Length: 381
Image (cartoon, rainbow, N blue to C red; front, side, top):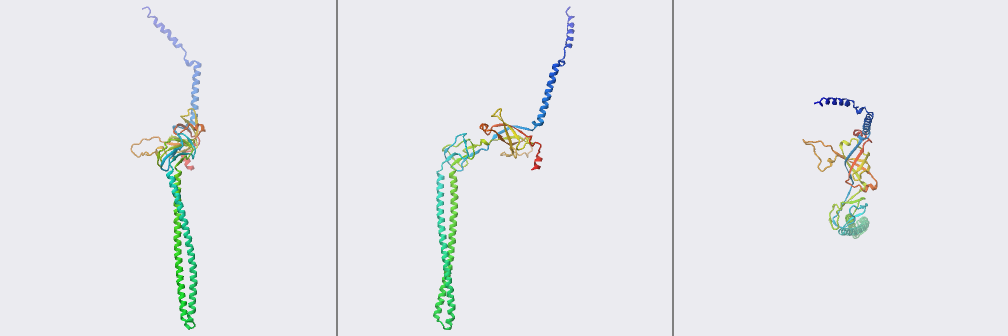
């Protein structure tokens, strides 16, 4: 009972001590530290705002981007069995290098046959030409005979005209006059025969010329068939159309392939480009020729550079097999993406690593030509 009055005296002693403890904000070091932190935050905020206003808002970024190349499929234009495959998987080839050989025997025989037909048609032309020359000679001879018959006919007419009055006056005999008239009739018959001979020679010449034209047309047809057969024979060797690397090779020796069968693909790795699918809300300032920064997942820590080449004339959905039709009652607006083609600037060593299909993150700097608007561009065009 004697200890109970001492408790209030202890609490009353602690209260003044708690009130006498100084606030940390009264410490100059704390105040300067907080002030410095506030100034750093303010400066950082101003710096970020200045960066965003001058640069950041013009940088359009997407990770929906992939490397692509305009690969060329190797497929035959003829049917046949594969006799030899001259390349391996992933092999580099030059344009014109042979890739696959197809059994050429059937096409070689067809080519020989067409060449033989050409020889026959050339012989037909020679025969038709000789016939035309003969017909021309016959026509010339007939015309000469006509001129001779015409001269004989004029002479006979003149004789009849001269001896007719003499025989009437008794100065000449009637027998001589009859003989002269008989000569006239014979000359007339020879003249008519010469004219008929000319008509026949002209008809034969026309027929010969028609045969010659037919023979020449047959030669052209044979030459066209031979050219087609030669193309088919040359197609038995499939060659690379471009420089690149072999991929997706399915050709095997002994395999029967039909026209259009894909045997392999030549990928031009030296002509890689980037296809970036930007949102439609990111394309307002984007123009061809603007620079791009490229980061490939396969090359961490490496930054490549590129240039915008072109922008697709439609969204990806518009070129789909079944384009969407939104003319229905239920509609949900979805931000569309538009493919943008970007040229990659990389050295030869880097290009040996890059292959189509790689994932890429790309950032396009749209500050250049950023002041131009679509309406201004349309007016300029």
